[in-house]
Length: 350
Ligand SMILES: *Cc1c(COP(=O)(O)O)cnc(C)c1O
Image 1 (cartoon, rainbow, N blue to C red):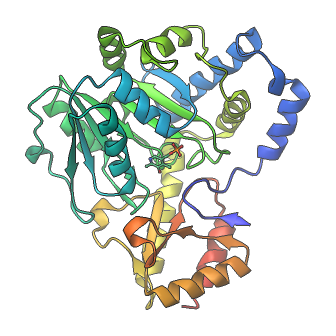
Image 2 (cartoon, rainbow, N blue to C red; image 1 turned 90 degrees about the horizontal axis):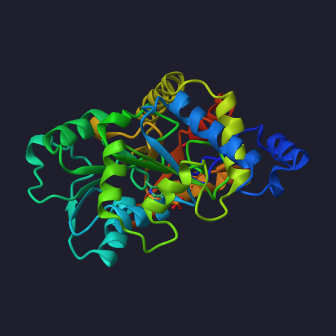
């Protein structure tokens, strides 16, 4: 089955071989305080920085998921106020989760077709500005350049960015914000169960100043453990090892982005030539490059999904309010050209 689901999605072909290697090398049983683990952890951090062009003074943490990152930010970096800019289900969920811990979590919703205007976004009270860079539920994105403008206009605020379904697919300007996070079952092409959180020196400084120490995953505790390439609890050692192996094989993100954007353009051209289906979002200026949602009438979509399934292709279901009238196509790096061609051949029949 080829999974075009926007996460969990198709994993890289080499994964079974790397799992076998991990078994043979004893990686699955190593102690998470051992030199062997610390070497894998350090190398993975170094490769993440190299491949994704992350500034050397940023700190990288391992988490279990992106949801855990939402929680860490709420626990350790938000004291009262946070502002949540979103136009879809994931950004909304992030706001809801944070609001359970802080009544000061403020929703700043915007339209699916709307391009944010940074001049109109002003946040008077100090707090964390939370942005969902790539909204997986509706296939829209907030470009790095826009995030950078928001940061420039609010130098004292921390900016936190959910880049779960874009990191490792497109090039992100990490200097434009303070906290970035993703989980690996999307663009990284890995099995689920591992997240990465990337923090600027300003974010680390803020967390040390707030000095929240109530949780096993308090950021202060995680920061002190990471000075020895370790985590407070036993991490997903196999996941970290697989991430290291995949990164060793990866191109620099600039090259991956080129491939992803070219494929995205192919999808837009292809969809513009169809009669019964079309892109869900018409404003191309806000299109995601890594998640392509398609709309059509419910009957057509049902036939498409059934035929795709018959050909061993899994499409992403529509999400939330778009459930019945959309399906989503992952445009993640692990998917192959011939697999995309196969899916296009099916869609051409409609
Ligand atoms: C998938 C996804 C999440 C949740 O990731 P988990 O690893 O399940 O916690 C959060 N935000 C976005 C934008 C996502 O696509």
